[in-house]
Image (cartoon, rainbow, N blue to C red; front, side, top):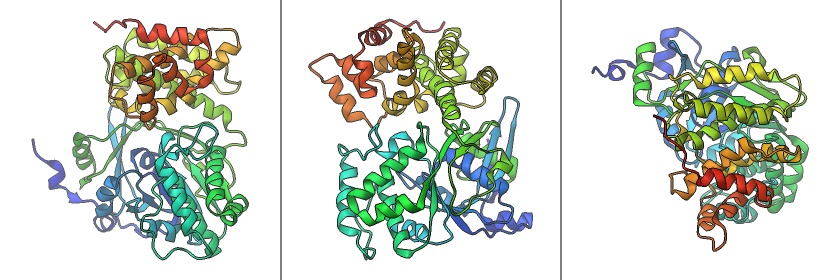
Length: 475
C-alpha cells in the first residue's frame, strides 16, 4: 500500500496559507486547557468558522501529557477535521489553534492568562480532571491537589514567584495560578468556559476554583469572585480516537500530511449560558445557542446521549460488542436503550422535542463509519454514572418506580469491575478498596457512585441481579 501521507506536502501555516493565499495571522484571545480530539472538533471548529477577522486565535495547552502538542506544534496548530457520515468523508483544515503547548509550560500559561487580550479560558479535561468532590470542593484525598495547595500557599504573594518549578500539576491549580497573575497585572475580567459533561458545569467549576483560591490567597479569591464569569455549557459531537488509516484519509482528501487529524460526525451542538465580560467569538453564526437557562438542555444531553453511551459501554460490552454501532444493532441492547430513554424522559421538561432528539441519536449511534469504541466510553465510570444514571434512578424511585432501566447501567459496570475488566478510572483507589472490603463489595462499589443508592435496598437488589446474572452473548 502506498504511503500517501509521506508523499503529501507537510501541513503548516507556510505551505497551507501560501497555497490558499489566505492571511495566516491570528491574534491569541482564547486559552484552552485539555487539547484533545473533542476540543478540536468542537470549540476549535466553531471558532474557525466564525473568526473571519482573525481576532480569536487559540493557544491550546495539553492536559495529562504533551503528545498532542508534540504532534500539532510542527504543524503550527493546523489540523484536518474529517466529517464522517454514513455515506462518505469530507475534510476541512482548521486554523484557529495558533499554538499547541505542553501543559507543563506554566511560564507560557501564566503569561497568557495575565495578558489583557485574553478574554476566554475554555476547558475540556474530562469530568474527573477537575479533581473535585461531588459538592464542588477540592478533593483533599487527592495527593496532587494537596501538593498544589501547599505550593500555591507558599508561592502566591504580592509578586509572582521567580520560578514555576515544582508548580501546580492539576488543572484548577494552574488556573488559580494564572488568575492570580492576571489580578497582579491588572488585566481585567475574563470568562471561564468548561465544556465537560457535568451538570451545572459553570457553577460547579466556579465553586472549585473559588474554594481552592480561598485556601491559597484570599485577595485572589475575592478578585476571581468579582471579575471572572463561569459559563455553563452543553456540548455534543461524537469524536472517536484517530487511527493511522485516518491520517491516510486526511492526506488523500487534502493533499497535506497531517500527523494529528480528527474524525467526527457531521452532527454538532453547543448550548451556552453565562456572561462574557471581555467578549467572545460570534459562535452563534456557526449554530451555537445562547440561552438563559441551560439545565433542560444539559440534562437532555447527559441523560439521553451520555447515559445511553454508558449503558452500552458496560451492558454492550458484556454482550460481546466493541463499538456503539455494533451494540445498538443488537436488538436486546436497543431495547435496553429505549427503556433507559423512557425512564429519563419521564423527568425531562417540555419543549425539548424529545422524540426527534431520540430519533436523531439512533441515527448517530447506527453510523458504523464512526468507530466509537465502548472501551473508550467506559473509562471514568464512577464519575460518569454519578451524573448519567444515579439521578434518573433517584427520580424514578421518588416517583414510586423501580428504576430498572438505569439500574442496568450500574449493574453492568459492577459486573465488569468485579470481573477485573480494564476500566481506567480516577477513582481506582476507591474501587480497589471496595473490592477488598470485608463487607459487601457490591454495596461499597455502589456507594462510590451515590450513597443514596447504596442505602436503598431495592436499588441494591436490582443492581445485584444485573451484576450476577449470566448475560447471554449475541449469536
